[in-house]
Length: 126
Image 1 (cartoon, helix red, strand yellow):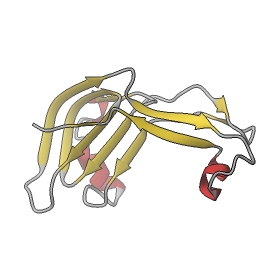
Image 2 (cartoon, one colour):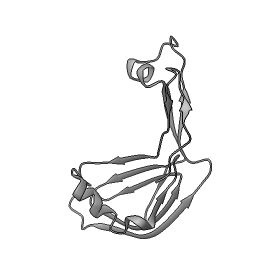
Image 3 (cartoon, one colour):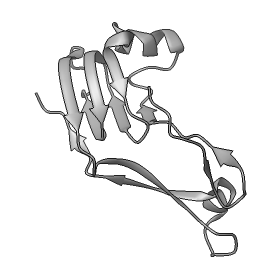
Image 4 (cartoon, helix red, strand yellow):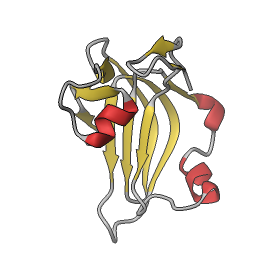
């Protein structure tokens, strides 16, 4: 899993942000369940700007991700396996934009010091 070089946001704190990986509770609620999602973790490469959304019972054997990807499986379906997938799109992913204090943002954005934008989300349909 990649990490970006530290950047300074409005609060003056250097932060190295990694990929945004969102796991729906239907996928995993414990680390052990999450580890089962990636049976060969060494075969999974995710860049720092990537966004991966997982929902339902899924398993990922090999993945190279440099962008934004959704893998879903409806409740009640048998586990969905992604054998091998490569998605690389330099315009796709999660992007962080620093915000200045006093710009009128909601409290969470003001505390965080940046806004996020997910571009070109791709849904895996096999």
